[in-house]
Image (cartoon, rainbow, N blue to C red; front, top):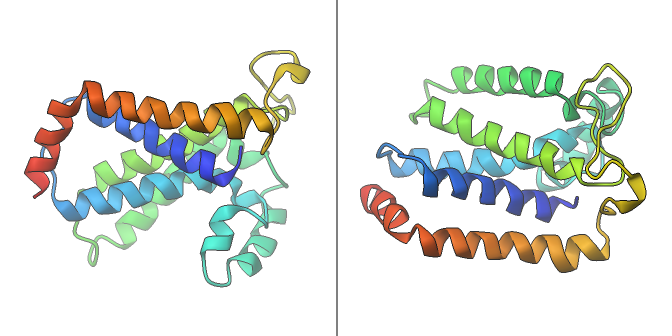
Length: 190
């Protein structure tokens, strides 16, 4: 999937949680940092690719991407697995702890938002032709549907004309159906 589809999928997953779960009131700062962490989490699995959207959005990101990609074994290896979820989840938790003196937010909410984005990325990539090596280091890529030729081509017509608009519609539907919950949540932020 492309970066914009991963961004929207991460946002959709976070919206679903917000709309369907009982969320405690949080500060505006926590909400903004959590949303940002969610979008970063949605792009993080692709840091193993020097041309990834996350690297393009950072100053000198392409340089870091070229240095880091070989250490992660190439695209869709460690960062696209259950082991990658654990490692990157721990790493993000470590970064939050380092920033705890300057970043005054609910770190658990921010970490949860990051992980929702991260996992949404892997789920979306499971539907692509390349699949995802969920059980890395076992070198088998899982995909849905099991027949590779029936899966979505990254950046292809199906992704652009069906998947992306469908995610937009899911967001509209979620916000329409659960507008009371979301308005209540937003009321506590303002």
